[in-house]
Structures are given as C-alpha cells and as structure tokens.
Image (cartoon, rainbow, N blue to C red; front, side):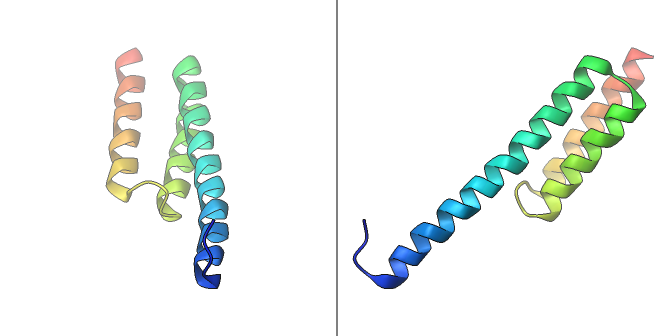
Length: 80
C-alpha cells in the first residue's frame, strides 16, 4: 500500500477504472457470443453497438472495433 497521498488516490482511481473497463469488455464479449449463436441482423446490430460504445469510451481501439465489426458482418454474409 502506498504511503503518499496522491499514490493512494491513484490506486483507488485505477481500481474503479479497471472495474468499469472489465464490465464494458465483458458486455462486448457477451454481445458477440449471442450474435455468433444466433447469426441474425438484429444481434449483429447489438454487437456492433456494444463495440462502438467500448471504442468511444476508450476501452478498445477504434480500429479494433471496426475490424471486429467487419469480421462479424462477413460471418453473417457467409451464413446466408
């Protein structure tokens, strides 16, 4: 445990941010798994929205979110 006051605050803040980031990432993974189970346009839009939200909050990079969305769309096109 840190002794310096600012370091103590950084520990608290980083714990909060870590929890928030893990929740967002978990939500993205859940949305993607639901999409892969159903392979419907509706689930694709939900997964895309979750990826966009994670990218806008800085949890994942914008290009990574776009790459994942493109791969999900390709899976849907191949399934039809």
